[in-house]
Length: 139
Image (cartoon, rainbow, N blue to C red):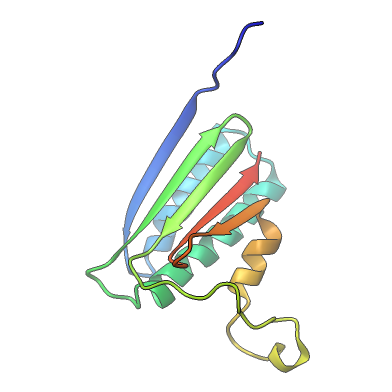
């Protein structure tokens, strides 16, 4: 039996903690979607999730600190893309988040990002500290 090793392609962005960084990430998402022929549905889910993850990293993790960076990695392996978004903040307790669908939270202006990410990505894993999220999408 012959074993075939699938090549893995890696991409990295080191982004300043500024909302303008979102454009750089969107450009990479579009580039990878074109290169790997990602379906429109998966593309939309990736764009939504990664926008949320980067926005959270910049605003909540790094608190818009210009001296802190957000590292975004994309690993394309066969028919999946795994994205990792890491900030330099202290992290957060992702286990005990308020349920944004609970009646008392429906009109809250924040608190939906992680909920959205967990529902749109094929897999969502936070590191123990809560300052890194890994998102897997089947393409």
